[in-house]
Amino acid sequence: MFDNKHTYLSVGIVKYYAQLKALQPAEQTILDLFKDRWSSIKMLDIGVGGGRTTLHFSQATADYTGIDYSAAMIAACKTRFSASPQASFEIADARDMSQFEDDSFDFILFSFNGIDYISHADRLKVFQEISRVGKSGGHFCFSSHNLQAFEREFNFRRQLRFNPLKTYTNLVMFVLLRTFNPSLMLQKLKTAAHAIVKDESHNFRLNTYYVRHQEQLDQLEPNFSDVKSYSWSSGLELTHEQASNTTSDLWLYYLCTIN
Ligand SMILES: C[S@@+](CC[C@H](N)C(=O)[O-])C[C@H]1O[C@@H](n2cnc3c(N)ncnc32)[C@H](O)[C@@H]1O
Image (cartoon, rainbow, N blue to C red; front, side):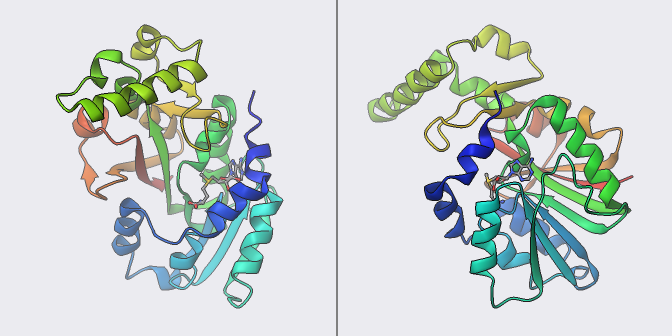
């Protein structure tokens, strides 16, 4: 079911990630938040893709390693950053980072929802691996798709607007979502803690994990503390109420301390 790696090996997708440059607003917030600390931080950037985040973090940190399970992404990074000896890249799967020793990194990033392309059981394994390779008191930052916001996209009535053009585009997306996800039922989604969805990213090719905010906090609870949530689009920190109920952000950033 989770054949997402195949997609991340394909030439066109690698090319797409290798030309991205800008940080997302929440990533900029995190970069600013640690601005006095980066120079002493050893960072692991998981699912580095084509190196979008490398551009910003590798120059700020004391030591920077980018990993990805797609050999093609790592090859693209090595080419893109061939003149940047401070950035190193390795092929590695987040589910098994046995090439890294315990307590190796001060800051671990898994950006742009990279963690959403594996199964539920593997996701829990990844959280454990991150807490193992991360130093106690260090930080882990990642983003993940927001099931609460997706539920609205999957609800016919929520697509209707006063603006007919907006209604039309909403309905086209609604029909595509329903077509690519024939077994998803709105009633079931409303009570689910997490769900696997084929959404529009890369033309509905990927199986993507969506999670409710409270469920995400529960998954982090055994290994992480002091969890903060951020709107990916505004970069602002969200209260629990905003992150759980009101935000329309299709994905949220999380920042937590490693126990
Ligand atoms: C949505 S892309 C984001 C790429 C990059 N971080 C960016 O923001 O432009 C997700 C990346 O995570 C990688 N990835 C997904 N699952 C992974 C895993 N289990 N281990 C390592 N990398 C993984 C994919 O190969 C892909 O490069």
